Length: 75
Image (cartoon, rainbow, N blue to C red):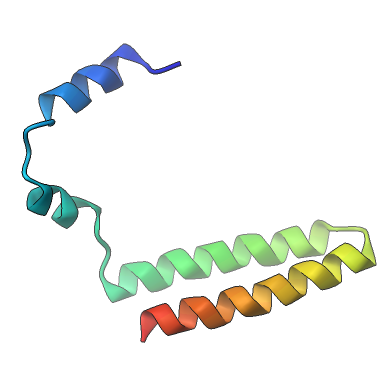
């Protein structure tokens, strides 16, 4: 269900040029690093809460790949 206030807000800004919106929704390198750090913390906490060892191993493998990909995106 979409809240009426959100619909009104979207309609109010529908004619904003894409370039203006991109400036609002982009992150600089430091902001991106912060986001990735928070995501990594959440991933690690999830792995620690996982009881099944096989599932932990799978999640750790996925985490390694995720770290590689995010590191490439920062460079």
